Image 1 (cartoon, helix red, strand yellow):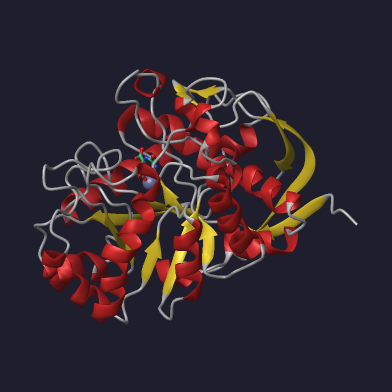
Image 2: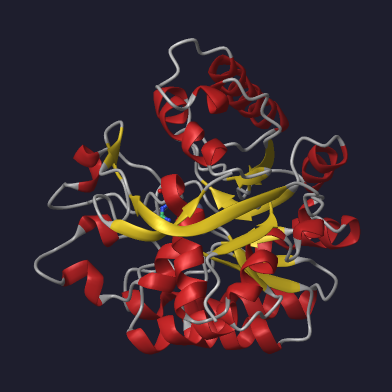
Length: 366
Ligand code: NCD
Ligand code: ZN
């Protein structure tokens, strides 16, 4: 029998880009309306969040936007309930790891509750990063081992963007090369370090995360569960389907999805919703990497689990798996998603939305 509704604890987005300034004001309401209890906020701003002061300032900016939304008197019709809501959304800050920050500051920021995790982006020797805002990332991974050592001691999670950033590595092998070259030595050297493999896309990486004897988990985006690499090229180039890591071939998508919808507890929802203005996404050369899913992330994930007849595993994936790692509890408040048509908005501000203009078969109702 097919269920017509699912009720699960309010969810948590384990990987979210909110940006700052006007973009933050534009996109934050999307995640708030999705009933998230909070999110792991990515630190790759134009001026990356590399110090305690910057992380505090960024959190303050997010909280100010939340407050301003609360007192918004121009609520769109029918949405007054939402705009009046007193948000209990927890922005969980992360540190952008550089080659320079001292181990002591990493620990201090964690102990003072400024950040809950450390984000690892890597850059190559020319200072080129593999994704948006990653040029300040770590060039010398071995040089960061003293940081990993204190993180292991204090149980500070390492959130890794594991993709090789050398120009000559094949685009579709970047993740698996990084597993062998970067991740495995880290796990071996720091057996007690909690690790989250961010936005996992490669079946080989999925096998590794599922099987290795380590405190390791992986976030998976809604779009990587739904599209393979053909989607970037079908009917012409589609920048709207371009993100890092790039979607992989079908066998990889299917393998990752198999782990997720079969209820493997090492995998959890992290949207990697990454807004860019249409102008940046539509450049012929140097199109920005990132897919914006925030407005309907819950519905996209629900459709995926429904297609695999696995709705019983949706709640753990969205709302339970490894939340304790981030210092979050499973919410005691529930949310309900019902079968029913939902048309995804084409754009929010100047940002094209993933699957914009199409109809989804599920709807988050409250
Ligand atoms: C992200 C962004 O735009 O900040 N882009 C993306 O393609 N996922 C950065 C990231 O997570 O790699
Ligand atoms: Zn990201």
